[in-house]
Amino acid sequence: MDPVLLTILVIIFALIYDLSNGWNDSANAIATTILVNTLTGVPISTTHSITGAIVGVGAIKGWRSVKWVVGGKILFAWLVTFPLCISGGALIFELLQRVGMVAK
Image 1 (cartoon, rainbow, N blue to C red):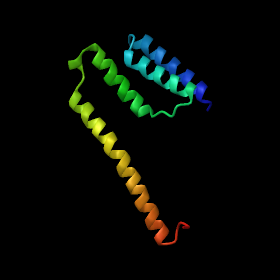
Image 2: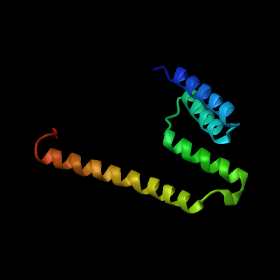
Image 3: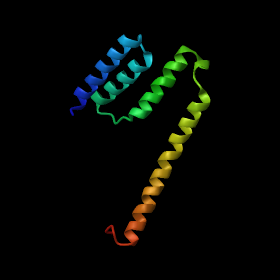
């Protein structure tokens, strides 16, 4: 599916959601982030966008409205996940090369 069309559909869905549930700042933040990144060609993780939008909107509504301990755990998981995945991928690639399943 065309990324621009997908982005437009996401925005329409977010607006319908907002109209049916009251104006929801998080949905608007998510749709805006996805739209801007899609139109500018910047790679985007929707999981990061959604989490960042929810935390950001919560922080604007009041510092205490965000459970910062949970946010810290999410950030820690993001920081640990990337090096572990890179290391695991490199290890598996090395093992596959040694057993001859991948050319050197």
